[in-house]
Length: 423
Ligand SMILES: Cc1ncc(COP(=O)(O)O)c(C=O)c1O
Image (cartoon, helix red, strand yellow):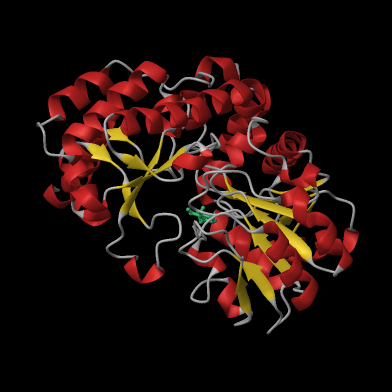
């Protein structure tokens, strides 16, 4: 069947090409061989609505074990008293939160897209389905950094039901500690969307939102976290009513079947985070700084230089003088360096389709074992490609070829022999 062979060869071509590229998309990562090895199982075909021990379906005894073990490890990683690992993505996790914690028409505060907010925090996304009263966080002159004094005034004045911290362009920790008290005094729940930085939080190298006082933490499990594409909802576990609402928000509020096949891979990834997360998070953040500095040394302009560019896995690079983010993103992709166009901090959202910036993330290349020397080399390749100084494809492939193995993870042999129960 020629038509069927087409899908195989297209997929193989994708895999071969991606393995030859420098992937700097800030929202992506790769699975270890151990996590990949547990993706293909009978769980691809099954349902398990409800919770372990309280399902609406029979036949779930093995997945019950996997799900409750995953919850335990995830709770431990984030200092959470309560965790739900069923959301199938970060957006679904956010939907679960907003649908239960934001009464219709209530006041909320969140980041604008221009300040790096995610589409699910916007009028056109999940939050906008609940309310049109979305107040933007007041910012300092850079249009990005929260002005804490003005934010406190805003919360005291509007008494929002919920505030949203965490963003898609997240270069520095958010002022959780600084805003916790004013939220408590005004009956406001603090929600931290850690989609991007979940692995850095787990590694203890960014900030610890729940321990700093946030009420709810959500995230994607596949950006800086080591997992397959899923989401999590977490809380401190001190308020049963809150946890009950979140629970209903996940199921039946925003999911039914919860893609059981990828739960074992999430479990493996969570244990990898416990084992290697601290080293990985440290290496990732120092690589991001090294990349920003390498770009600046070559005359390019990473954003927020006065704050030291970044404390996360991301760098926002101003390429307005080189054709803008759309053109440069395409130019880089032709050279097998993959990233995405992005508004710079504070750039007006009307520029979204033709922004001045590109967003660069080093978390995937760090997972392949790259360090500061390679960040300098990538800075050089980016500079040459952006300024059209030379063709760099061969150099990109040569650099990438030196780092074929996923690090900071386990191998299938570490998972042990199949148990008699599974035979
Ligand atoms: C801040 C933020 N929240 C939520 C999401 C959505 O995550 P997912 O793609 O897992 O649905 C993203 C995606 O990049 C994000 O940046």
